[in-house]
Image 1 (cartoon, one colour):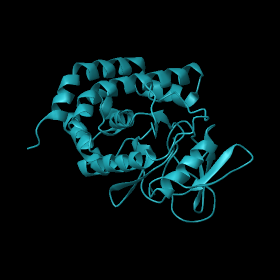
Image 2 (image 1 turned 180 degrees about the vertical axis):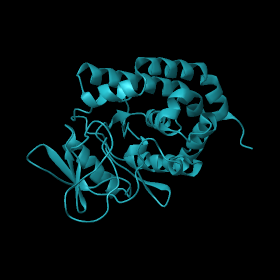
Image 3 (image 1 turned 45 degrees about the horizontal axis):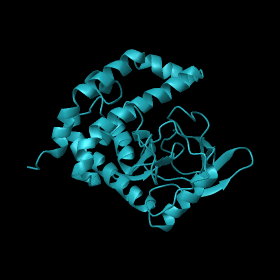
Image 4 (image 1 turned 90 degrees about the vertical axis):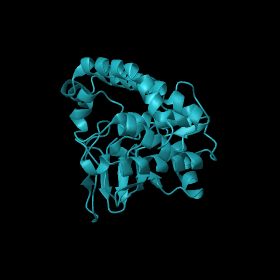
Length: 276
């Protein structure tokens, strides 16, 4: 989940941000060199197929190297890092993320999922599905140009699932669907989450039946996120141990999950209300 902004030149430059690959991702001219996920071969085939179907909002694979790394095309633009600035938290920026996610899903729906690949299950849809979801559309993984979402990066956690699961995961980060105390730690300018979930759903083109199901699925996706962090802490990952402590530990997770459950019906009402 390492991202950042870099400009020009062929000298290796570390790209900042994220936790999982911090300090291990570099830009060399027009190529990004980074650790390869275990699904790299299947994932590279999928990324190439996306481009063949007209979706250019993802990196193009260049090659796998013999030292467990991969090379992908560098996508120029702006990537927001926490605490997230005001420009990335506008409704227009959020709507552009929703539209780009729909374009990704429409293209991915025409690509058969490689059933032989060992897709990661950490943030994957527990119900499974026939679409290869990104599963980690957080602000650090979206490239903006001229204030609009232009590309997604870091497909390391991609796995088969339902499109709505990907929308729920995206909502967690982008609305964000967080209690106010939690939101202010990384989203100091985040406005009304109820209105913003509606902005995301409208931009994506979410049908009525999915709107009523989305808030509960966001809660399920949050539980998956908690399990993901639990596993990283159990493994002693220093980046996650540090971030967990700095962001409030398990008290933060308890407060967040209780808040989501308590406001589920309010989110549903915002999603299904008649447009003014």
